[in-house]
Length: 101
Image (cartoon, rainbow, N blue to C red; front, side, top):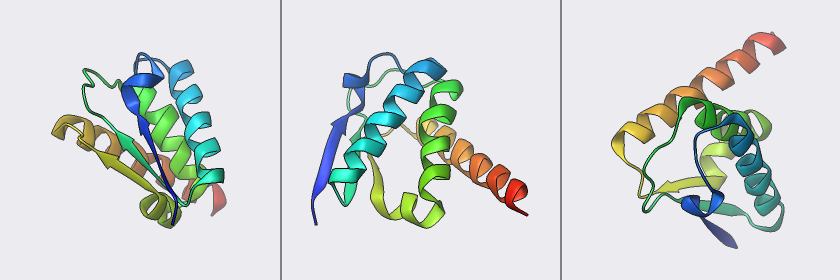
């Protein structure tokens, strides 16, 4: 199984929806080439809710809950960022389920 690694700090400031959309596009492109992806948060200083929602929430919606869990791995994540990402992913998936129902 081929796994790609992306250093999150290489994506630029993790603070805007625009940067979140750009990061999401890179993640989804990498997942076309690899079975799984590791997102390395080493050296990260700040993730805003807007970035997290646009990047991780919409990536989870695009992949679906099971594929997101299986194919996207988060590494070296601060506790507060893990909580934020978990929250935005759960909310985005719940909103998707409401739209489908």
